[in-house]
Length: 203
Image (cartoon, rainbow, N blue to C red; front, side):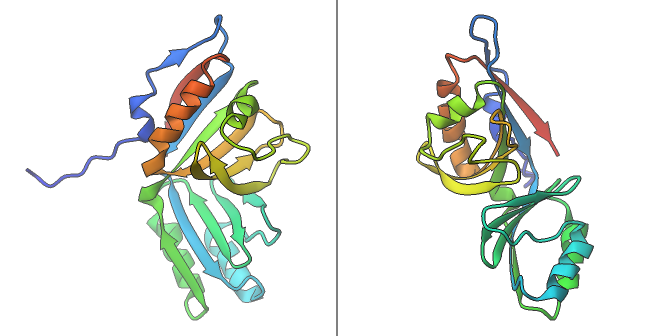
């Protein structure tokens, strides 16, 4: 054995599947594999901290509860009064995270790398909301869950972080990789009548 470890996207076991209903694909299920995920804890009232974060990663903290802000290639999700999830394009994005650690040196903060344990699914299409609604009691109506909002909830008995585009047909679902296979199986079954298609987008 050479000790090498190969990476495998969770969707690899599903992506060849496609089941249009009467020739129609009502929902696309896309995995964004191998992105970076970091839990950041810091004092949001410290203006120097907020400025350092914006300079380091090109995106500022969002302080309004259950909101998310997106830059060109990264997201910041509000999780609590002093806690955020940072999503970066690659789990190997050491330069950006190194800059962030350096910028926060001397301040109270904690930065925890969850990259190898998380993945993001995008559920999109005319049937996306109806498919997701089969697994959660959370109200996904765009009038209540609009653009720039996020929510920690349960879907198919699995803890997830939801993000919505505000159009009622595009949603991001961030889930632990160890539960992603279960969630994908649920989504496949829930989307059977609408027609589904799997795809994967790697960082």
